[in-house]
Image (cartoon, rainbow, N blue to C red):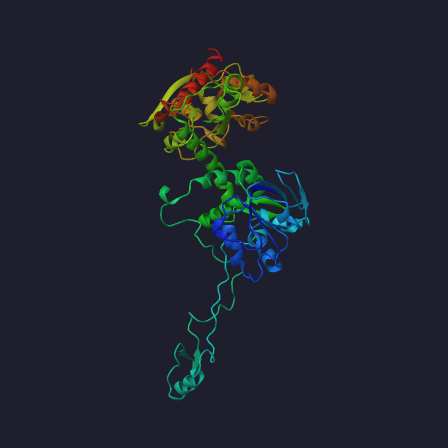
Length: 513
């Protein structure tokens, strides 16, 4: 674990009002003497400092530093080597630092790996895997000696047949009221409720949020490690640790959990991972709007949403053009994993563009579209299916067979799925044996069975030969499959988005008629 920051030297006394976020505090001997409570180290950490380097620490203070997630290292003679304000790289694992002005090397004791591991989880509680903010609340049981005269007063009340103050009569005896009784089965930290509910009852407003946490959340969910996330963001590890603590309090969830020597995402964090990528990409696009755009130098990221069929067909030419014209840009391809319903308009607004056939619920105000390419439907069946040996077959033959249908919601007819809409137009209500959220998965459920499916011809050719399938021409003409590019109208004046739309059109033109 390494840190680098501007040194602030204070001798044996440290005025915390002169500390700045990212500084490395350099101090003398016995730092933290008489500061046995954790609030002292928490006060240090709240300033945002990166690390504390001292000639020696009071042992309780040193232990508390790691318990709250504040790096600390002992380096004898450090005050004589460091000048105020110079950048100071610190290596906790090696127990050494090198001054940037003179190149002098100072060596202390290497930090125990267990303590470094504790820092990476933002302190002791997180390292043990306990829920953030979980506190075991206890109420002290009233004592007869809590103040002079109380016991005698209680005895006098009992002799008079009245209940002492703070007690209630029950079954001829006295019982502490519920608000004063200690829970006979106290919850463990894992069982106790988080400080904030997982599902807030009131809506969250942007004005109440620190949107800088979005970038930190994305880095943490990508790296699953506080130190690596800090390195990628170009900030100190304590700054990321502090942000992680705030995120944990906000979501009421640990987010990063310790398991088998590594950190894994909690179920909520896994749910957030996809959302934060989309939100950050949309935010970057928002603040990049109106700037001069040069594809050859831009490092902007573009997010496209489409099913695996257009990704397979359009992907190769799009990838080549993208690499040739914008070698430093990033392309994020999100695959549609379920049938898009009435929320398609919201999905389009969260990405740069979406590739999909035209559907009624896409045609909403503020959503633009342009045609990309078209394809025709063909029927695929296993090579040993009797249908492949028939000289001819008709609609009735198809209606009797079981079907594999991609992107079909199990909500009856008519369906928004493109293949099912074609069958409905033919008057076929197929017996759907398998529903899949993928075009490329269709052949896996046809080989060696009596099942059939409709797939686009551009996709059928490569998958048929690879899976031992036969491609059959439908007995009646079907409407062509049209793929369109959809985007939010707010991108119309964005030069980067204009370039992307033109690139998509040129990639589609490479497919031919």
